[in-house]
Structures are given as structure tokens and as C-alpha cells.
Image (cartoon, rainbow, N blue to C red; front, side):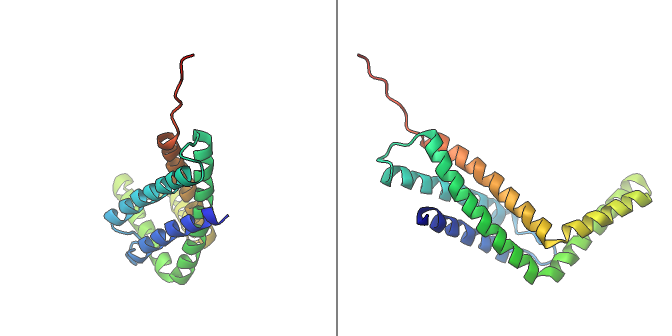
Length: 171
């Protein structure tokens, strides 16, 4: 179990760094931080599976085994990331709400410019979406799902790269 938790904590630490660089107005980190985070997540997952292949599997690993190991890392990473993000949102709830309001107003203004008017049903829908998106449980659920999807993709790519090639011998 320690084999999965420690690497996941490394990834969560990297995710926490991204949260530190977020702008309190827009809740967005600069693009180079976000893309760098994705690259580092992939490289960390890849290197952890590679280390598992070298140390625990005698340098031989099948695609399925590498993918399962990557999925375990991904699951722990997604759980820890979700917990950290939930507490981050709870601590910064006011700035999160202000940023969501600003995004909603910008979308309403854009819609007004495009259509010339905003129907009552459209306004009601946007306000409903605002209340849903301001719920920390919804946002952390979205964070969990996006971390899980990204981790599955990283695991698939890593497993495909690291799978052992079979050598056929002629008899």
C-alpha cells in the first residue's frame, strides 16, 4: 500500500503548488503553471511505473499490469487532490463566489451582445448553474472526475510505452 500512497502524495503536492499560484480574481493559474502541472503529472506517473517495472517486476511488465499499477496511483492521487481542493475552496469561499459571479455576469453580457436580449428562462438557467457551481461538493466532484480521467490517460500512455516487448524465438 505504501507503494501507491507516497507517489500519490508527490502528485498532490504538485497540485497544491498550482493552487498557490491561482489568481484570486479569476481562480485561474497562469497557463505555463497549468500545462507544467499536466506534464509533471504525466512524467511522475510514468517514472513511478518505470520504477515499479525495474525494481519489482525484474524489468518485465505487461501492459495490463502497468495499467493496473497506474490506475492505483491515479485513484489515490484523485482522492487526495479532491480532499485538498475541497479545503482550498472552503477556505477561499468568498473569493470563489465572487469569481463565479464575475464569470456569470461576463457570460450574460456576452449573450446580450450576441442575441440583443436575454430571455427570462436563460437568466433563470444561468442563475441555477451559478448556485450549482458555487456548491463546494459539486466543484470537488468535478475535480475528482477530471483528476481520474487525466490519470487514466496518463496510465494508458505510460503502460503502452513501458510494456515489455515479447521476443519470439525460432525453434
